Image (cartoon, rainbow over all chains, first blue to last red; front, top):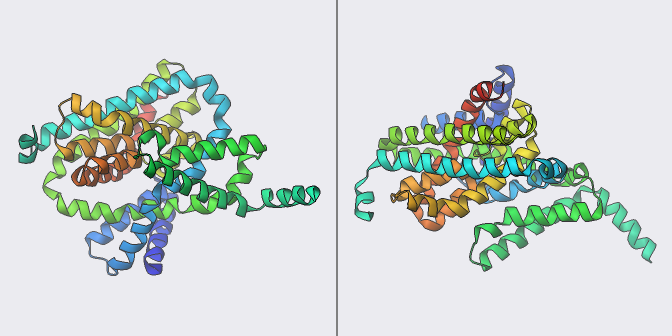
Length: 118
Length: 240
């Protein structure tokens, strides 16, 4: 668990350093995620500790959004002024994204299970 | 006695402990309520605890930075949590390697649609520049979206709120909308929920079944990556 957490923090740190040094358009933790994915593909040892640490963090993933989400209190005047644009954007975009992804995936996957279900 | 109470409140309101404890307990209570009431997406604990905590801050006149002094200990874990997404992603990629091409095509379609439709709609409706830049990454999971918004010059905490709303919206309308479009493959349904609505979509997908849930987690992880790569380039075209 502790070793797993250390692995995650080190990959995040390396990701942050690379993102800053190379001025990447991607946030540091995402660089860390890609590096860890590569390391796992290359069979990094100590998978167990890593699985426990990542499982624990991802199980509480929703909680981690709360502090930033409460930041909405700082934007109430902006949202009060712009809510029609924001609401239209969220509604149109979420529906269009679901439709585009689902439609392309369903057409291209064409797995036997899908035809049985249909 | 009452002056002692006031003193204690003044002391506690300034310490990080109060706001940290309040954040965690509010979330735990929200989660218990969510489970008891049949996991309705509108009662998702993120949504209820944000509403409760925001109300407490407004009612007690506590500035957000003071709240964040306590809540930052929870917030900090987002970084390692994003790195941790590599572990389930690695597992799913191994199981589904033959599906790499169809899923990449679906991911690109969804990721580009998410950014373009969000920004174009908001721009037509007259949103300000900071709002546009904060809306662009709204389908990526919150920590990634916040990082992207910050890099673009948007407002990370506004982006986080918009991400939450997107997640709730997708979880509520997603399964019905996809059924109507005759998307019946659970893999396609789950993948779409993950790409469009990140973690909250994934939570909803797991309620539809194991396959939908696994593909949703995959969609969420891949879209975090795709959005961070696509948004900077797309925004140069969409918001000059």
